[in-house]
Length: 187
Image: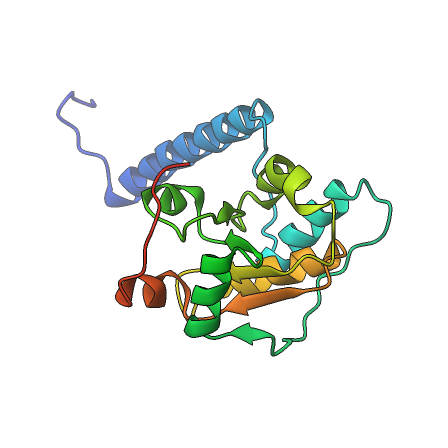
């Protein structure tokens, strides 16, 4: 006779727990897929490196007119802090901040446009009228600092869109603020 107080074997407990975990994981995965279907910008199901995501954005911006290819070589077209300061002061170029929008709002180089890598397509659409009239206009891109690759990727994206005079200020936001130079806040 089996009583109410009969204990399960460790083997049976393991498999019942495993089944519960499998059910919870399956329901969570299904819910995630369902939520993703209703997002304005769906999350990719397969990981794409930054370069591939950026190349896709460029392709969409150009409406497929030309197969955009992100340059993988590194062009030594860097700008020093002193030159960058002069460019910003004189308004001699379009300055582009490649950091995420949140950080741009907290502080950026005066007059800089926010063109973050993650939201490149929508940010480019927002600034298209300022950027596109003359693709030979000088553009200087900056990011966090010397170890931030986003400024290089945004530079390459702009070159892929046909801009011919794009440089990078490698010192980035950290060098700018460490030098006590002026900053703007907000959008």
